[in-house]
Amino acid sequence: MTDREVHLPVAAQPTVDAIVDYAQTAERGGYDCVWLPETWGRDAVTVLTAIAERTEEIDLGPSIVNTYSRTPALLGQTAATLQEVSDGRFRLGIGPSGPIVIENWHGVEYGNPLRRTRETVEIVRKVLSGEELEYDGEDFSLSGFRLRCDSPEPAPPVEVTGMGPKAVELAGRFADGWHGIMLTPDGVRDRLADVERGAELGDRDPDDVTVSIGVNCCVLEDEERARELARQHVAFYVGGMGTFYRDALVRQGYDEAEAIYDAWQEGDRERALDLLGDDLLDQLCAAGDLETARESLERYEAVDGLDAVMVSFPRGATEDDVRETMDALAPAND
Image 1 (cartoon, rainbow, N blue to C red):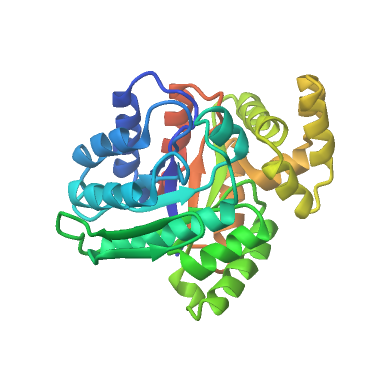
Image 2: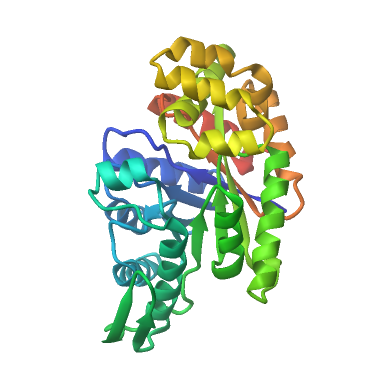
């Protein structure tokens, strides 16, 4: 059975309390995990600590914290601490993010994201083991220290994000899980082959790699508004967040992503939205009335090898929109 999780809103929220309340709502609704993005707003660690202290059963973690603004050793310390604070409910989601955020917000050279992610996973695992840290990589060389507190038991899983085939293969080879977004159900099937290939290269069982896919969801009484919010969200990511999402859609056979990207870059947002047709919207999102949204989620949940669907929300959604959607799609209401 596929888990249903919540990817908390990526857009700015009014207060930390509001974000914690979303997590509590998800717990009451029977969701299995809440994931918190970290972009250029509130830091994930502080907010996740508040969530851990004010929930009881639901798993929690960042999806994602990037691999450039914190050292791998600090990420290991953070994972150990949040595993303690949450009584064993923590999952660490990491990834390289993209050059726009890393270079323009954090002021750090982007470098080789695949190598950075692999070395970070390996170092975090060593930190969490409690063993003395000896590591000689291309990006990091560390020696002579071990975690000063007790190592967590069990160690939290280390899950990674990635868009391209090589990034997904890396997840299958080195990580405990892979998070994907901007993928149709058929696109998920293609990337699952990359997970399996990576697991084979790492002499691992692919079933040991948890696969979680984020699906943008919006279920409102005003069906047309729900679809428009989802359309605006997808167009922004394809057109305004670098080339990762554009390229991911082109790999899945949606060449119109090139035109959406070009229109957005030229400042013609209205044309970009017009180019994002209903077929692509329905393949990528669960938006509209409840029946339509549930059918969309069921298409994902039917993908063999997919472990979890992460219900995410359009960046333009209000607090009421988020709550209405979360309640409508809650496992307790299926």
